[in-house]
Amino acid sequence: MIIHAWEMPKGSLVPSLTLQREIKERITQNGMAERKLAALLNMSESIIRRMLGKRDGGVRVGNFFALTDFLGIDCYFAEKEIIMWKDQCRGWRPFTGKFPFELTPLVFRIASHLIGDGKPERGGFFQKNKHIHYMVDLIEQTLNIKVNFYEDYKGVCELSIPNFLVQCISAGLGVLQSEIKSKTFFDKIRELPRDYRIQAVAAFFVDEGSVMGRIRFAQKDPAILEGLTSILDSLGYSHTEIKLARTRLKGKEFCYCYLDLYADGAKAFFHDVNELVRRYGPMAGLWQKHHIVERYLQNVNVELSLKRREAKWIQKILLEKFDGRVFSIGGLSSEFKISYSRAYDILRNLREKGKAERVRNKLYQISNGGTQ
Image 1 (cartoon, rainbow, N blue to C red):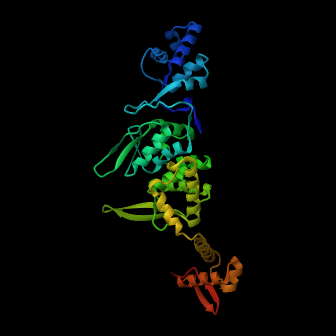
Image 2: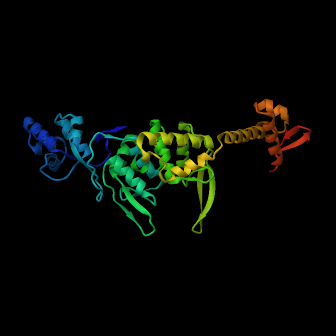
């Protein structure tokens, strides 16, 4: 995914000496004074002077390319002669990378971390957690810049996400900066190539996932989890439905939503992440949770998990569509093309739940009106 300078929604651009000389020559060839050119383009004379290097500071993206286009300067040449992108908000460090800028899967992952631990503040985004050094390494490797962060007395660190990157993501996905922490962001991710989607899921798991007998994603906002399910479905990772839970933290009770990956979905996800680690390096992995997931999956029986899911699905069908019907063990086996022993286990389980009763030897009547 390539982002051109003219696609940046905000910010100011600083031209190189080469571009400044080219602009000066074009103005001279057209025989126009700076004041007349400014009037023709409906912009202040100070903008023209900044483009010529006669005044310090950058020029807004729209004015920058309005001037170069008017003078007949090729936009692709002009963007390659940009030496700095500056944010319009005070306190944000300028970015000295080159245009056009490539949003690789790893660069895109930085923005994906904003969904979980990202915190909008002062016109940009911050991230705060105890494992911030992974994020620092990712930003420094992909953007080739030095990152500063702050650590409090509890060992919790905070860093600012380069606003240049946030603007690039906004431009590349066609979303507002305020929509990055929303379902809209996931809806746009679903249209991206597979590597980008896997990195988005990996970033969300690192921030909001857990491994305690299953791989779980949790979030307070159900809309964000709904967006995540669409990404999981597009990648073919089987998962449970979104469920609601309550918990207590520091004496206060609050609700949150969660979903779990089934064993086969978890293995497929981890396999894909390892493939990206092989191609892009360790920063594409699950960071501090990588080995935890690896140990968990070593003890997972995918075949048993699939059989349990199938049994639950059959029980659901029986209760929804066959209420009151009498089944023999062999009849159920033929109806759903399962083994005799599995059919027996399903009917016995329903009977234990009060959802079926044995009417005769090897005959069971489904009774959805029963109590568990």
